Length: 75
Image (cartoon, rainbow, N blue to C red; front, side):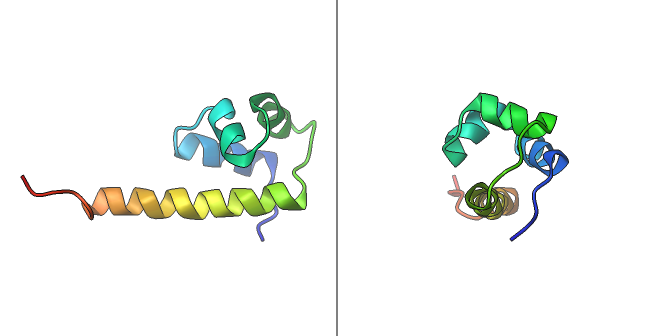
């Protein structure tokens, strides 16, 4: 499990063009809580860090498939 810093969370969100609200919805927390994490007022707990690991893995895999053209229909 990665130890998620406030910078890591912001980088993940920006890399995949997610708003704070969207990342909050994916993790089951509010957009405001994501804001507080990025600001450094809160630190993610173990469960949230595990969710962030999983989200990073899943979005990264999906993004790679889209870039390679895998799954696209030939017209």
